[in-house]
Length: 146
Image 1 (spheres, rainbow, N blue to C red):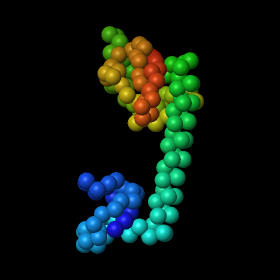
Image 2: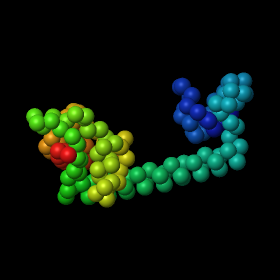
Image 3: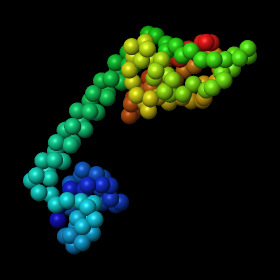
C-alpha cells in the first residue's frame, strides 16, 4: 500500500515521502498513529506542493548565500566589543553578534550558516566560514575595542 509519511519513520522513510509498505503495517500501525496517510490524489497534491515550496525556499537560500559571499569577499565584518588592556574580550563573539554586525553593514545571512573554528576571545582579525550545504566561503571578522 502506498502511503504519504507525515513524520520520519525509522527504516521506512522521511517526512513527506511517498513509500510503499505492507497493507497491514499501514492500516494497523502507521495510519492509526498518524505517522502516515493514504496516498490519495489529494494527499499526493499536498506532497507535490510541499516539495515545490521546499525547492523554492532552497533556491532562495542558495541565492542569498551567493550574494552574501560576494559581499563578504571584498569587505570584512566589524564587531565592536569590550576588552581589557591585554586585548582580551570580556565576552566571546558569537554567531548572533556577527549576524547583527553584518546586518548593520547591509549584508544578511543566517546565524546557523556561520562556522567559527575556535571561539573569538581577542581583538583583531579572525577568519570565519559561511556554509550552505556543500558550499562554503571564508570571510574576515574584525573585532575592535569599544
